[in-house]
Image (cartoon, rainbow, N blue to C red; front, top):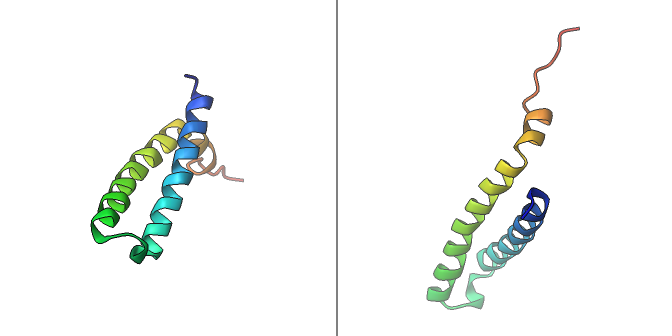
Length: 73
């Protein structure tokens, strides 16, 4: 799988996980307490993993835009 394809999968996964955590976080009464802890906590852990993978795959962009040294005039 190419880097670009992997990024597409990770970005879609990040979006779905974000929506899951937002809905279960804002409306915890929609599901039982046990299901909330399973869904919200597990999704949070997977979200962190996906976010790290997203940053790793985009590290060149991060370096070029956020970590570039300013030239003196």
